Length: 222
Image (cartoon, rainbow, N blue to C red):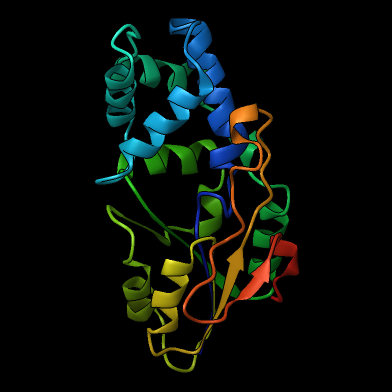
């Protein structure tokens, strides 16, 4: 019998869609395309995820498709990530490290579950300084909808299990995993200052099942 805490990454532990996305846009615009507008950058990022996981190559391609005059390439984005965002600890929510330390002190095994391009996701995990807290318990799949299988494979029927995610689809799937899982849906407040995005982040969509709701990891009982 073990206590297992499974955590989503983007928008659960790190402010990916808020301050990081805004700062990444500003850095790339200043370096390569002063005329580029936020709405074009944000929409290109959304399209890059439409038929698969986000990659810098897809994002750059979608930017050029939207405006052929913008000479943004994968190499441009990679250079900015390497030179400007080698340390991403500033984008980690302030409640994350204290919660991880509290969980481990109280005997919880903590695992990170995410999906997306492996290289991109692992860069963010390392750059955020969170890698040591998971002691190798990291699962990154290429597509969404696989977290429930990982939890089922690595948990037992007598374990105490908590799963935290911002997406109801993932939480619903884990709820169906036939395990005693307490599911928490976290809804982080928007932090971007750009006008296009103000108020654009809706409240977390409700799932098929009822999940506990929180806006901070401090609200989760460990």
